[in-house]
Length: 456
Image 1 (cartoon, rainbow, N blue to C red):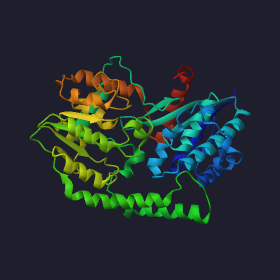
Image 2 (cartoon, helix red, strand yellow; image 1 turned 90 degrees about the horizontal axis):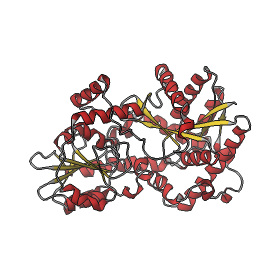
Image 3 (spheres, helix red, strand yellow; image 1 turned 90 degrees about the vertical axis):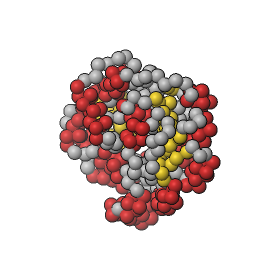
Image 4 (tube, helix red, strand yellow; image 1 turned 180 degrees about the vertical axis):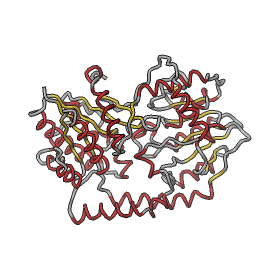
């Protein structure tokens, strides 16, 4: 039986990475193909000799006849919430039509491949854009396994999750922590370093630096030329909205400057870290908690007397929070403090009594400090016995006032060994030869277990 791994990409850095992975797989006799929602990258892939499909060429026809339920999409409006938040769009019908066009295109592409390859495996980065969603649902409709990739807690490792949007599952079976994992955790605590995936490093800086970055200016000119001169289509086509958001983030960060405070040390602290506002972790995995201001308001109202609630912007999107709503919350609650974004997250965690989070990685980092964690949403640590899983926000007031149970370091190390065991070596979009070789090996190791995981 002929096999084919089908890679989905949305941008040039993704397609170039998967091209390298495909070339590495070819050396082992494994055939690959690409669907790229970025027309200029489709041309690059074809010039490199790869089989590449342009999904925009497969959208013609009666896409309006696409039935969401036929693809087991029961709540399409909820799924569209990701692009509404990410692109700041409100036209539901426009997005629904886009979703259907992508579904029609992916179905036709898969049907074309199935004529040559009876066995197809689809691989893509986890995401909530309609292109990603359509690839997933079209694959599952054809009983094809879809493997989602996302960064693990540990630098240089990734999770591979088959056939679902929910967070990776970590085994609760106690695992003896290896010397390697113990040393990595010791180094994290000693250096107080924030683990940033290679692909996201450029985001962790102020809005002003992003606007002035020569690489970003060059990319903007390329995108403008591609869209308005060459007429090429892509997923990330809302160029004006992207520019406006970053300009607004810079202005917002200036407005918030007067309201930043130091970390208090004289009272017990409840820490709520801001999530990336339109991140998949909120929009798809925990959409009921998309309004973070409402969560903060509730925490402030139910915090024990004498306690302080501290909040801090996500370091990758300083200025992304709404300054007026945030300032109004600060005026409304005298127990609320907005921390300066330059304050190290580890410093906050080491001084905090309790962490309330939807599904931020900060919740896992807090366990390194043996802190009490209340997890509201879907995360890789939500089912750990170390965490207080909140099924609904109304449970929080009573739990906040409950006695704190002691967390043992051995249990923390055991949990993170489980996280390590559930992830694989490799970095997304790092095209160094060493990483390509490592990532290819990890991908093949996962796919070999595909048959046992199709029911998930």
